[in-house]
Amino acid sequence: MTARIFVAATAAAMLCGCVTAPSPSEYRAPPQPAKPVEISRLWSGRCHEVARLPDRLTDGCVAGASIYTPVSDTRIDVRDTCQVGTPSGREKAIGGRGEILDPGVNAKLRVRYLAGLVTWDYWILDRADDYSWFISADPTFDRLFIYTREVPTDAQVRALTERARALGYDVTRLEFPAQPPR
Image (cartoon, rainbow, N blue to C red):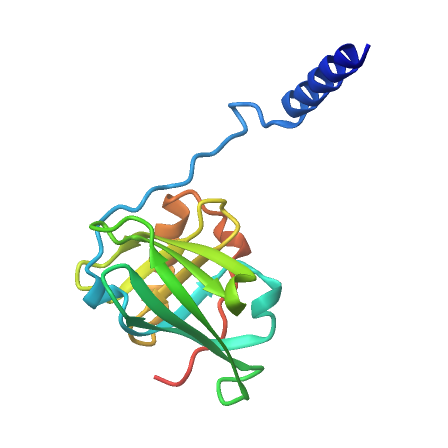
């Protein structure tokens, strides 16, 4: 009798999994990084956050930036900062330890914040040949960031937004936080 209950419970669990799984037509494969990344050129220095998908952690943040510090061939320290309310507002910051998930290509970074309580993946989907900008996202389509090395012009923001659209992201949801003065 116990074996029948086990088999019935297993079958029910499998059936539930089938019912809730997305159909192949609903599944969107995430875009893959377009180019390899030189650690010393992308994963080092300060980058300005130009646009992002909404997230409760960035509510009220403007003039955002990420500061990358290479530690080894596979480890990057990350410090994400923003100003609260205005570009001259109080700084809000969080630090994390990043691990490159695809050594040699170096376009996928997993960052653990708050002693590993929060983990985000950042994939560099596209970048400028001179590393002056890059588009970063996670493989779930929940996070998208557009970064530049210098405060961008409006034309640059429009062009990068169109590039994010071409990658399959809903750019109508993007937030464009205020930037520091040029």
